[in-house]
Length: 464
Image 1 (cartoon, rainbow, N blue to C red):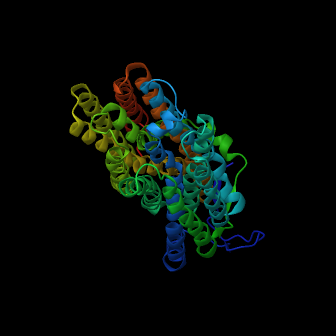
Image 2: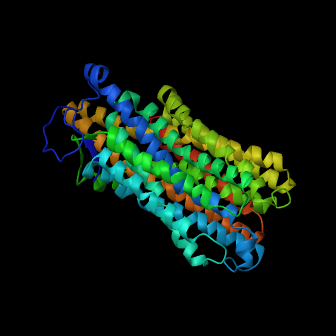
């Protein structure tokens, strides 16, 4: 199943709540007089809810900084320092994995329950990992318990998928790059914001009070749910199509774009979760305290989030595939800088390389999402040229775009799991992250080749 939005008025049976029956964003007059203000209102509250979701999803990138010697002494973590580091990397990998897993059902929930209604539910669910973590987090808690509550934080990762699917239905094709980029970028800002909250707590009251971070977020979670209830809308014309997911899984572009999204968003979320631990383990002399590591972890995610809409805008102007290809070239160079800095032990160069990776992954997030509707727009134009009705072709393109967004979002998020597992294995076996950096370089080179071969080589129909 996937999302589709009719381009003409329909009158489906109302299911209660704030439902809009007539939604025609591709109609210039409707968009200018009616559609745009409604779409923007829904966009802003969607961004807020997704922002809080990202914060809770990345909660354990902050919590691990509070799990210091007291937790080792109390038996929560066991083994040599490399083994303790590996155990902490697993704590950040698990919520990434669950967040990736729930993205598909979250995507389809928008059409089943309505964008507004599902935003209320998905925001409210964020209370579960927040309260559970506050309840169990203390020295001596079993490592298994930490794994369970860390995994629960993955529900925050699903908010992205439902939010993107909802906003994709609200906006016309010509503005999707900007709208989806802004929606995703505002959501991604939840990562650096919770890291800044963690930094503030560490700087003021110390590493013994992680619950303060959690208590700060409870009222914001409630505000996201209440705001959605009061000010968002459901689109009656958005519905699940039973065959769309099956059709999308048989479409080669679904898997190509999912692969590329592993390289962009997977890198962003994986590095966001792991960067603090990488600093602590790679440069233990400079980052002997949690406060020292927290003082830098927020910078890369912040810049990567802020620049994501720029990636969408650049893709709108120059083409998503062209921007994406150059992003991967630069990311390979950025990973090479990180590897070189690790070899010579240069902390400033190491941080510069990682910040570059964050910025580039943010640009790539925006450009890859712009490519998705553009791919199916090309297919729709081909179908119309072959004699198919334009409205039918457009509806199929939107349906397939919604399906691909859900699949690529889920598969791409698993890239964050792979990043954390790569660091875990590298530190466990060699005591450093060098092996992981070499893997990242090789992967980005492959992404360049794939982007060129499918979307940029001479003669391809999909120069999107």
